[in-house]
Image 1: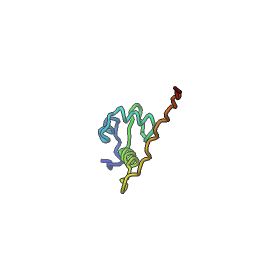
Image 2: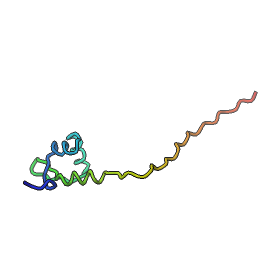
Image 3: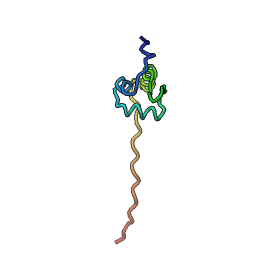
Image 4: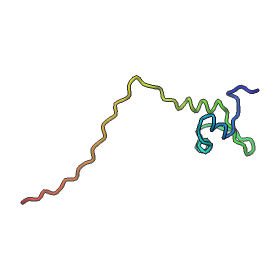
Amino acid sequence: MPEADQELLNIPEAAQHLRVQPSTIRKWLFQRRFACQKLGRRVLIFRAVLDAFVAAGVIPASARPEKRKPKRQPKRQHEPQVEA
């Protein structure tokens, strides 16, 4: 039996591994977010490629969040002054 990282998964198996819909896997393949192997009509993905894809998207936790700049207030339009 091949090692776990050398295992090839089809689209439904890859979706189950990442806990997403198969359509999401197809969309990511179309966007070329990760590599795949085609055998005839079959699209196969290495489990290691999926694991690396997930690891690349991990955002490390920081000690404290960065402060955000306050949103700019929209400029007010000047109303014409009416003299009485």
